[in-house]
Image (cartoon, rainbow, N blue to C red):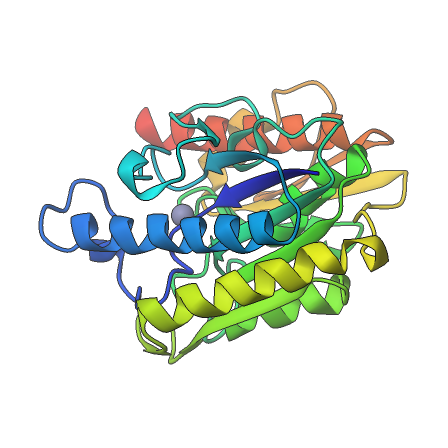
Amino acid sequence: MRLYVSCDMEGTAGVCSWMQCDPSNRHEYPIYRRYMSQEVRAAVDGARGAGVSDVVINDSHWDMRNLLWDELPADVRVISGGRKPFSMAEGLRAGFDGAFFTGYHARVGAANGVLAHTYTADSLYNVRINGVLCSESLLNAAMAGIYGIPLLLVSGDRVVVEHVKEHMPWVEGVIVKEGIGHYAADSITPKAAQAALREAAARAIKNANSAKPFTFEPPITMEIDTTRVEQADFIELMPGFTRVNGRTLRFVHDDYNQIFRAFVCSFRLGGAATAVA
Ligand SMILES: [Zn+2]
């Protein structure tokens, strides 16, 4: 059995501040990247105990160079480095039997979602697909869905876990903390989170047969509200995008792969638009 793991950091137990997730921070980040790595390790160990053989881990936070190699088993593969074409969903392809999302966080705009955002709050104020307000979890789960791969486990705060289970009730959810607004949390300890992840991962693999791939029904309509109007000016130039209003753009396609590519282009262009301001 082959497992794909996309690991973010904001949903790691104990994390409540950008200082803990920002690689340029020399005080808190080195501590929390270790906890992030240990949570991934715990999930992999639990899955392995339940029959998973091959594991590919996609480092999905910030510049995507967070995982500490010496915290991981020797026989996994790790995708790392920034500007991957498919970003947090890089490496998803046919052949995996399931996916785990660890350290994930709530969508942009969610109340009590610790450090909630969707890819980048600098450019993306809201992302809707077929009218559903999307999180990174939904956007990335639908990439797995293209290949018939079900999401089996998600970990993070209560808001992201409940959001995922609302759309994918079969997913094993590990709530490691309760958000108290955007920048505070009531969390279990890293050790307790790792134990919970190990157990949940084993359950998720054992119950994999009852999980379903997550997909959006075609024709798929993506609407993006940008944070700033000049970002929409850039995105509108891309073939296929329609400007709905000053800060809202629409892209429609039957193929979710094309939707996701358009999405990645959008936030990269959004970043470029503000960089030249
Ligand atoms: Zn992140």
